[in-house]
Length: 447
Image 1: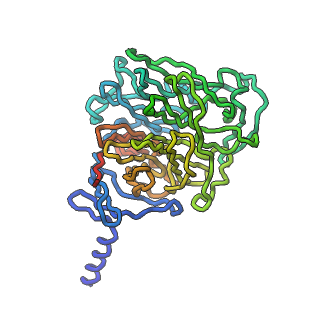
Image 2: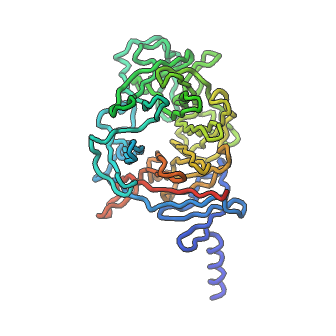
Image 3: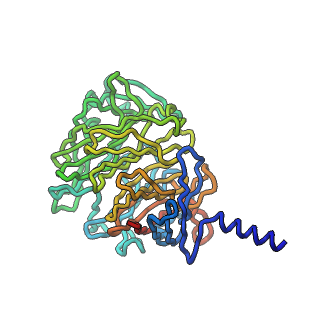
């Protein structure tokens, strides 16, 4: 009997990640996009994880213990106490915000639809925001101004005089889209809305920029007309601005509106006007993404894009179809967004990807669902990704342990802060409540 127990212990030991002195040694498993979603590297608390690929340690990830920023004082429905974001002021003060409204088109631009707090000690403690703190975010332009995307309130279609629509499409999870050519719409539905903080000032002012794209299409969603232009902006070496945006609806050469892709625009006048640069059209890989052709409106969404130090433009995109977890795709451009490689699947799930390149060259990818995941690429293009580092445990794919929407901001040369929601947090009374968490992560490469 003792021999049987001894061999069982050996089997259990060999089947688990090796953990010595609170450090995990993880040999890459190489999860494929066609595999069932399963939990990756457990990184729920303070951990040092040595990541091995083919027996060789390629990076070490040090994760601080998560810090709870705030906890809901009552059960909250979907949309509330989630979708967090984080940024730094000019003085290095951390500002965290999160959604406090319904997850609906009617919440766009809603005053009071979010909550904000600040940290003066690098995320260790948090307090109510002080109005004297500049609400800085966005990106700094070569002329010293700062800009960020502004989303105005959606307009009820009954209050608009609209041209003939191009098409009406009902997605397989209930949303109905009615498409219109942007250039034919009323002026308030054209162009790009931005917030600008001029150099030397500390207040944001809303402005409208010109969008030069005759193929651009906008839409009514469930009876409301939003003006949405979401995505990442990058400053290029020549001082221009590149933006990769979604929803990327457009009129193709056959005068049809295909499922959304990602559209890239360039501004050479500090964001006053934007010109079409290129696009990633929706091209599902049906061998690794069998539900790809079932997405008839939303194809690629929630793109994260970053201009790498070697000049390669990297884009990671979400897919969604209401049929369960669906893969993320990756694509590259070597001509500043004019042309793109055919997108490839590289995960079996993921929403709202966020990208960041550290000074040591490591590329960080944060995403969610189920749970919250970190992945790292140490190749120069962002093609070879690690297994997922799990921030929250999950038991099954249907159980909601987080909204899955993370955000990241640099914390040092080779470190960053990660913010995310935890739906299973227990307060001091043992009650399960939604919470917003942050943790600092450092990445050490073996180069």
